Length: 348
Ligand code: DCP
Ligand code: MG
Ligand code: MN
Figure 1 (cartoon, helix red, strand yellow):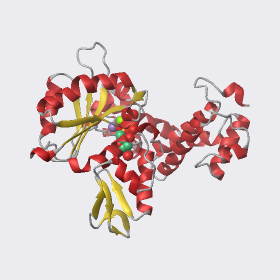
Figure 2: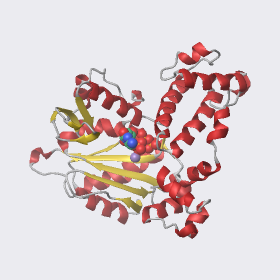
Figure 3: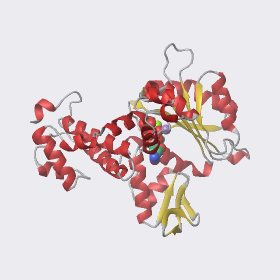
Figure 4: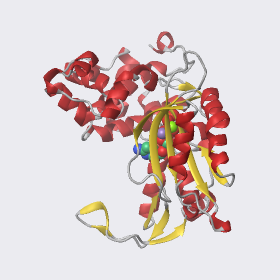
């Protein structure tokens, strides 16, 4: 069955990838417990994309990491029939609508469900407020720039916005700031879903970066790079801060709006933050899991020892523990017993 299904990407298993990816997307849109299914398929899909040989037998499927009984069955069904019946049952009319709604920034499985239950079926319905639905400000922006936000930018565009505008604007405020472009860009990807920027500063000279974010945002609004703010959760001018917004190449006809994220972090956390913000998310999950198994706790602030968690709510920490590594990625890898990986090697 395979040769005629293999296609565009030159990957001999592309026809399998297409079906499993659709299933992953449906699980993701459904949310709840299906979130975990989506995560598993994400891992399986990564293995399939790396595979150079076509899958022909069940044994071939089983050789892939993260493939167990049920996934092997699905892969073999696709190999034998070119189709996956499960998709028909997952592709329910409500879910297809909710999937479209979830393309709006700030709308996840639960909010999309609420919109659907209110009677909305199209993006126009949401714009019209059908069923009394009201979008918050960020969601309104998300709807207005739906197409832009849902398309990835070429790597070169992220690079240009960052090196020509964001980095110089930050350095102009304080030449000692460290400003890094992170996320998929740092991993060397050919396209980026957004621009992730991390900011910190060595306080050795007695000065810190506190207060930088507000000034930087103003500078980038003034020169037309930032076009809309989406969210500034928490205090913008603390030692630690987060920002989410939209930006674009200024003075460029038809420049699309792009998602922009800032992460401002204390100098002493820079290694852990660099690691977290480089990702990808599956790699981070794996490293956190590894840390937990060794009795540690890992997050964007550092690797911690002696964290006590609430036994009936594991994600609630009863104390902060002691930091044992946070200033460099290398020491975190080392303590976790993982050989150092370059950013482009960090994928689940
Ligand atoms: N991150 C994470 N878990 C999340 C979200 C993010 O660990 N739920 C970390 C890993 C990501 C990084 O933050 O690589 C940046 O998040 P993005 O959502 O911007 O993801 P990427 O930059 O990796 O991909 P994209 O090109 O889609 O933006
Ligand atoms: Mg990103
Ligand atoms: Mn991001």
